[in-house]
Image (cartoon, rainbow, N blue to C red):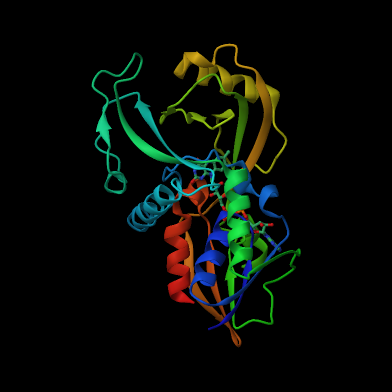
Amino acid sequence: MARVIVVGAGVIGLSCAVRLLERGHRVDVLARELPLETTSAVAAALWYPYRAYPQDKVTGWAEAGYRELSRLAAVEGTGVRMVPGTELLPSPAPDPWWAAAVPDLARVGSPPAPYADGWSFTAPVVEMPAYLRWLVRRVRELDGTLTRLPLPQLPRGAEVVVDASGMGARLLAADQSVTPVRGQVLYVEQVGLDRWWLDGAGLTYVVPRSTDIVVGGTDEEGVWDRTPDPDTAARILARATALVPALQGARVLRHKVGLRPARPAVRLEVERLGDRRVVHCYGHGGAGVTLSWGCAAEVADLV
Ligand SMILES: Cc1cc2nc3c(=O)[nH]c(=O)nc-3n(C[C@H](O)[C@H](O)[C@H](O)COP(=O)(O)OP(=O)(O)OC[C@H]3O[C@@H](n4cnc5c(N)ncnc54)[C@H](O)[C@@H]3O)c2cc1C
């Protein structure tokens, strides 16, 4: 069994750490931001393969993610629930490319105006603060460690390093193909909503959680600004209320911004650096939660 250092304590790093520990490796996680400070903590987080490539691999990872998150929905304290919902589209469309990953995808019979098509399915919804805490507990109960440490380069001192640094790969892997896609969301009080809604064309989404509702969003290419913009928030809420009229008058609780680590393709491969092997696993764009378990299994196989 190997000594492995995992760099990154977002959903990717922690999921990889859990799988590696389960296979008997000794694992230490090092991260500049602790789990609740990461981009992962901002995710909505609906199972949905959004802005992650290539499609063939993403479908497989997403399928694995669907299976594992469905299983975790039955485990106490994970923060995962199975929630039915609907995606609406402005014009007729063929089945989505990821349809094979979802067991109960069904066309919407009569989409409400102005929509012309849509599909409903049950998806895992992951309440990220609770889920990230659960992942950390899981790492610790399997005798892994988590330490805050900003790294100027990939660490030495282990046979294997897993690079799950998200946007940090620009520095740690000298990979300028990782670029931010800014996402702004707001949280409103729970108004009794028990379905998620998505307007695929305009990136408007409404995701109910146990005590609040995540309302989004934006996808701003190459924008690094992490300060929520009030005008953007007002526009998001107006779009979301048009999609889900039950949001009318709901109290706004807070605002957040996260930078999705986008890349033309997820990087999941081994690189030899002197006497170390580095397993890179970053660039999950808007689907890190969705793909986490599929990618973690592949990382564990490569290690
Ligand atoms: C608004 C929004 C909504 C989203 N909604 C969804 C959704 O509904 N479903 C879904 O699947 N995905 C969603 N996503 C995407 C998802 O959040 C990301 O794909 C995912 O969080 C990426 O996880 P990660 O672990 O790779 O990166 P991160 O969570 O960013 O973690 C990276 C880790 O690496 C560490 N690190 C980086 N550089 C260094 C360094 N030099 N030294 C030490 N540590 C370092 C960081 O500190 C951090 O711990 C959403 C994202 C946003 C912004």
